[in-house]
Length: 334
Image (cartoon, rainbow, N blue to C red):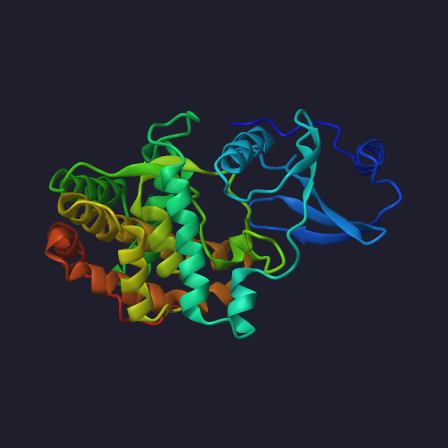
């Protein structure tokens, strides 16, 4: 666990910004995200930057990880933010501002799905090709909080549908079933995974040669290649047309052998089951503990993803687990 730096006061933040040469800039607070990072836009004489405060990240990835991964991405022509000023000990930085329009906003503003998802998938291919081995010494998937939080399915979703409190035995059985499925799969294709790859973490930059900027990659890990693509194409908050999904899978896998594509497809299904079981638990947890009920509107979409996955023969043991414990995916969660 990373310690939260002591003494990160407003005065210290002001001094940091002044020392970085942005003391005369207009400071516009942009709020915090679910990862406890805080942002502000600094504006002066027609130019902008972002102040990023990661001092409260705690057990999550810290500023060192952000800097390391940003450097790797930029060295491989993947447009991560330039870093203008740093205090690694305090978790403070000033970074390049990619503007306010995400890929999600661009989609809402009328940019065609095909263009949006082609660009996003192109970036993923670049990330995959940027490292053939774990040169950044990132955590393996099994060691990430993402993997550990798969247990949220048993903690938060299972009790609502099974009609009973869950036990350690339920946790053990669920994890055992997942491992049973994994043992039947071909060797896992691996690469750098962004970890939270969706349209809001890609910024739409039509005036820049690369056309995009990538953000919030500090939790990146070394793990199954399909993870980021399924995160993009099976986002809990929006439905991607099926023809786009199939086209983007083909685009991502272009140049792979038949065996590589088969392995990718198998792990896509398996990691999809991980992803949606974790997120459905997360949304219920967030609603119960923080009042974030807006996420409950997306539960039916997640239920549909899981139901579709369970029809795949690869996940037969998981389907048996769901049926044995009377876990339903057609119930209303409110």
